[in-house]
Length: 280
Ligand code: PDD
Image (tube, rainbow, N blue to C red):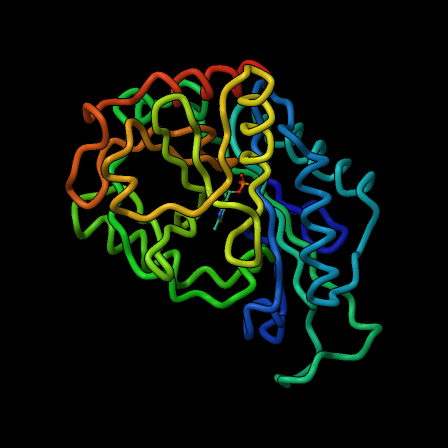
């Protein structure tokens, strides 16, 4: 695999980042995951806009224009022959020459890393046909989940807890209401209404979420942006998640309780179909 590090395209084993990198020492960095379908980037603009916002909220210098970033994405897709998969992008506050809680001097260059992950079956996913199982766990992350930082230890632990419980993923709960999945946004369907939590600092503003809600409204489906509890979700007709790496993925079980008939529902299936069709 060819990866990109600070201006250079290198074989992955030759790419290097400093031991003093703020991303490594302090999780002082942000990231984006953009999907590739048929060799084409899905919603690059949305990801670039959210990246710029994450950087600005943390006062990390934006290292290059969106055009240049797009060029690197395209170059990596081409060099690695990615038909279907993901592009991971990370920008950290850079590498000063020591460990220090204080932000480094202005002139410190942000570290920019990109790599590709080939994932055939992103669109024709077997999991989308059976649906996934989730467990609920408390949301104990920090209060600025709208910033896409690389602080992924708790989400990572959440996925491990799900696996230990025989499930596929976890939905996080705060003040009795679901915030989001460990790496995706959460939805339920009641009757003909799609319900998903409103945007705030409590959740990541998913790029897939924005697209899916737009397609749903264009298809005259009803959308309600509000918080819901795990109890309400268990009694819903359908549940699903969205993210760049799963698109629209049905959830068929929550904490061991079947949602609806315990099989993927028609609303999730239709949204998945529309999303993939519009993204091709
Ligand atoms: N995760 N919520 C969280 C906490 C996320 O980490 C993500 C994305 C989403 C969905 O956002 P989007 O639709 O823009 O992918 C929601 C990526 C895929 C990841 O961490 O791999």
